[in-house]
Length: 312
Image (cartoon, rainbow, N blue to C red; front, side):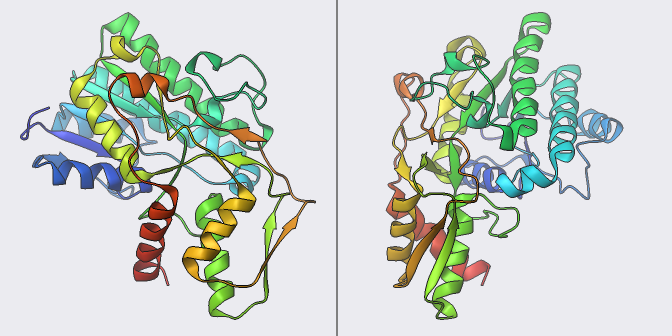
């Protein structure tokens, strides 16, 4: 990419897309194309085709997706499967049809089997059953990886796939009904502090281990990969994470410390935990010369500052 390359960031208002736009703008890229979901419904093949035919982007970051936590996945499984399949299929096909130089597809580490060995290596894809609570979303993302790979083989395209771990940061979703664990806990603990509630109840036992990556680190990795590498350099896909995990119990403690909440955290073991442990093997991305830079506490402080300025 050069500074005048036309770059389409699909999902530019979301957590990931907005971070990619920030990163590109900070590096001086001036020709970024974006559309809101009202302006361009990526689930509609005709709209997507017309957009690509008109704009002819050279590079595409495919970060648009329907996302959510355990509750949202449980309540809307058909939507998670349909919407994500349609979004990625339409964009990938249009990218091929209109000769996009390079496309980067963003998946999720929920693609890995529930009981895969830890840390998660790229080779563990499709070696066991998926976690039931997010299976529809995972199946859609696996289809996206396989689609990019198939297009590379059949059409000679240069479509890359990356699998980020659990993300957080500015522009995250803090809705308690649909958000992921870190922003949901941040919202719960903040509200408890403001309302002087003596305890906060958290789903599950608190023992599951999770890895968290600040979204600005992910954006840096995505732009680096887009600039430096071809699909042959990374194979089918590459993990992006920190390679370090933390229990939900300890995550809650860090959040309490940053937010300044002094009440009790109570775990409701009648609620699901999800996957017992999920941490990525990041040796491949490290060998390519990239590693995460933001510590968890620093990232949470940054995110809480944004939350207070923009959400409450």
